[in-house]
Image (cartoon, rainbow, N blue to C red; front, side, top):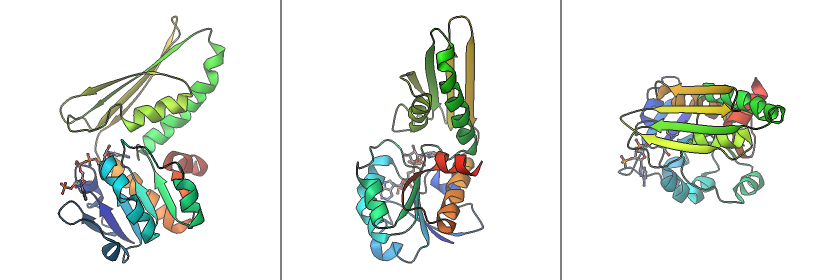
Length: 218
Ligand SMILES: NC(=O)c1ccc[n+]([C@@H]2O[C@H](COP(=O)([O-])OP(=O)(O)OC[C@H]3O[C@@H](n4cnc5c(N)ncnc54)[C@H](OP(=O)(O)O)[C@@H]3O)[C@@H](O)[C@H]2O)c1
């Protein structure tokens, strides 16, 4: 597969380590254009969220399968329908870790069990490197949505922490704590490449969520 990689920073550079596919990177000095992209089989983006959003019209124009890990922006409201109408398959995730996909299953179960407790409070603490532009992290916001309730979310920015998320479910008389820690950014690259391979094999027009696709395959 010939992959156009948008963004070769801390995370995108790990996609370049892949030896199975031909990966060619674009950045600010070599920005993507329709003519450059049309020769590729798929696109993977690890651009900052606002930059990715500005490229959406161009990326739709290519009609290519696209995988994006960019966070910190709002999706255009009608995008899923636009992609379906044009038969274009996209997949996104705030976190391309397989471990976080498993964590989602656990939080969905915990969410279902909420009514068994008289009262509870759910809090999420996330820690990332100092260069991260968005807070709270996209993953923390996803965890809140998987719990299907308002959670207290706190963010910390320190050193070069790749990604630490901890959820505490506290009933006053007992506490459940779930922690996920990313140890190497390669895990995000591997998840994004898995998603690109999946989109090439399975045409699924629309804006698909990585965790939901993983759930279907578990
Ligand atoms: N979903 C996940 O699993 C996951 C995991 C980690 C990170 N992320 C997200 O991925 C995004 C990137 O994170 P990162 O830490 O890798 O960022 P980063 O190190 O700052 O890298 C950003 C890359 O985007 C390029 N870029 C910036 N502006 C551009 C433009 N106008 N046109 C073309 N390229 C441009 C930069 O190129 P220049 O150096 O030339 O400007 C650089 O290669 C963030 O939104 C982050 O939250 C997602």
